[in-house]
Amino acid sequence: MRGFRPRPGFTVRAYKLALDPNATAGRRLYSHAGAARAAYNWAVAHITAVWWQRRAEQSYGIAEDQLTPWRSWSLPSLRKAFNEDKRTDPRFAGWWEENSKEAYNTGLANAAAAFDNYAKSKSGRRKGRTMGLPRFKSKRKARLTCRFTTGTIRIEPDGRHVTLPRIGRVRLHEDASRLRALLDAGQMRILSATACWDRGRWFVSFQVEERHQLVKVARPNAAVGIDLGIKTLAVLADSDGVLAAELNPRHLDRAHKQLRRASRVVSRRQGPDRRTGRQASKRWEKANRARNKIHHRVANLREDTLHKMTTRLACEYGTIVVEDLNVVGMGRNRRLSRRIADAAFGEIRHQLAYKTRRRGTRLVVADRWYPSSKTCSRCGVVKAKLPLGMRVFVCDSCGLVIDRDANAGCNLVALAARTTGTGVAGDLDFATAESKPRGADRKTRTTRPRRKAGTGRAGGTIPGPRTGTETGDRQQDTGAQLALG
Image 1 (cartoon, rainbow, N blue to C red):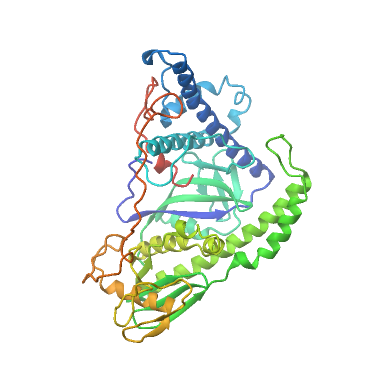
Image 2 (image 1 turned 60 degrees about the horizontal axis):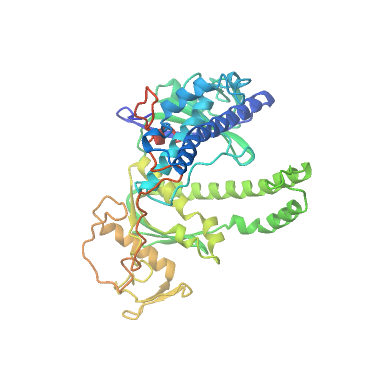
């Protein structure tokens, strides 16, 4: 879908629906997901075989111009090579016709994106953590997924079934009559469908082009500042001076006793051992399913809580102010990492971002080093230090005594009135620049410079994705194709 632009007045959205497949549809879904994994492993072996061959030839002293030519990892090249090899390769010759071509295209597209990310990470053109060389996917641990972009993809008129290529008619766990009505009215069209196994059941995600309809919020002129925490999930301070709090349900802590008991049962069973090739016993698989069921319930409860809170806020306020938290860094605290992960601060900001965009409201993200907790919400004086254990803010200048989180929420909602930028972190234009103590407004520790591009891991400098002798290569945007994969 490179270069795809929705029509004027339309936007691209995704709907995730639970499936209730029968035995036949379940086998076909597993087969398509396994075919995608097999195609991915074939692509990894197809590309890395040449890399290791070149490395061996270099150790023999062979000249550079006489080495084995590079193989391109662009999606068209992988697709052409796979189509030529699948009829003779014993791994595919006996069964490749049983699945849709979209299953193999899913694996090849994932492999092309993985090699592209690895090359960009080695050359310093990709932000984030360093990406390693793509590895083979295990049959036991690989995520089961398959993406369909062509063929018969529709929601049936009854709203309780969907049809997917080569899989056929599959029953939905929930009623999708509303989506079917939008399709019939011409307000929406399906672009792609992704079937995936998640939390113990099959889901289908439809990527659609839907007519954008703005819904007026309840208080368009009001703003709210949200201070996230662990004891209290969110402290809300709106522009009218009203303070509210969203209690943290701590779903993981509530289920921790059950998880400990289930984990002890799993540890007593004979599990799999990769070193010796030992297969897991039936009793271990049964106990592991029982433990996973607890994890799935916790994840569902957490997702339900966050969606209800963020939807309520997005439907009520015209401006929402949140902090740009370093969630990854906070998770390194071994005493708080489990509770920080359970609170899902990053997911809250992600949901607020797209829900405010749908309603045409504004999301202001305060700078990461904005001292919301250290600043007095009455006089504006900034404390030099405020330990995390001090839960009550006491101003030394005006004598204000207020809860630490409530003080931060008041400062965040005041930030909305002083912000004239786009609302993105780092693009805020404040009315007046206040002096802050050292360390309150910027990072003082220097970051490690990025690694320079150098010799590749297998056989010289890593080539580009289209380096090779294959014909028919064209520019592909694999990242856009894998938006729901």
